[in-house]
Each structure stands twice: as structure tokens, then as C-alpha cells.
Amino acid sequence: MNDFKIDQLCIVRPQNKDVAAIEVLFERVLEDNWEKNGLWDLESDLQEEIELKKSFLAMDLSTQGKEKYFLIAKVDGRVVGTIEIGKANETIETCGSEFINELPEIGTVFVLPEFQGRGIGSFMMEAMCQYLKKESYKGFFIDSGYKTAQEIWIHKYGEPTFLLKDHWGPGLDHMVWQILF
Image (cartoon, rainbow, N blue to C red; front, top):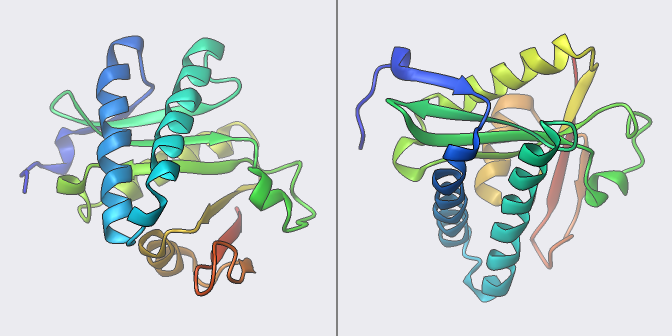
């Protein structure tokens, strides 16, 4: 486990020089998610998910954060986490929330496995919430089909606003939280 003091953590916007490190982070975190959630029978989906996250990052950098907006967490200059916002995804849209056109989705909340459980994700969430409030948003959506992430979001935000039962197959639910400030 990497030791660090919380004052060594900084949350910043990504730059082109960070792209390679962020892409490695996407691969490592998603592979870890697949392992922890027993998803290896969906290995082709893993590569799709990695490429999707890379495209989101490229979209952020090419539009200066207008289409997707990322923040990254660094410890001693090393990229250890990411978080992004953008338009709510299609799964969230199917929930029929009255706020679907008003609230962005927070996604790509990723922390390197060796840095997980140490408050970095919470710091990134707080930084993104501050940004959303500054931009006059009334809240956000967050969703997940990963059981490990669902446990985190239930602990942090309570039961989901929308439960898509067996969305990914028998016993594989998708959960959506609508969080208003």
C-alpha cells in the first residue's frame, strides 16, 4: 500500500501530458472491477468500456470541458484517480426522472486499486460537487451496475432512487441515484 498524507493530494483538471497515465488508470481500475465483480465472462465488454472512457477523456480535452468535464487526483504528481461529468447516459434516461434534462451524470469515479479506501474518491466527489454548485446545477445523477460500486454509493447516498432489477441479467441489478443539493 502506498503511504501518503492527504495534504499531498491535489485535484486538478487533466492536461495532455496526463493522458497516458489516465489511460493506464482506466485499464487498471476497470480490470480490477472486472475481477472483483466476477465479470470475466464479459471480457469483450471490458475493452469497450476502456475505449469509451478514453473517448470521454479525449472529448474533454478537445472541447475544453464542454462535452465531458474531468478532474483528476494526483499524489506527488502521480495520477491516482479520475472523476467526470457529462450528459446523463441512456440507462439513466430510461428511469424517467423529471430532472433528466437538468442534472448531469457523475461518472468515471476511478481510484487506482492500491489507493482505494483512503478518501480519494470522496475528495474527488466533493471537488466535483463544488464545481457543479458553482456552475448552478441543482444536483447530479450517479449510477452503477458494479456490485462493489453500488455498495459504496448506498453507503454514501442511501438506497438508489431508481432500481433496474436484473438489468444486466438475473441478480445483476443497475442502480441510479438522483442527488439534489
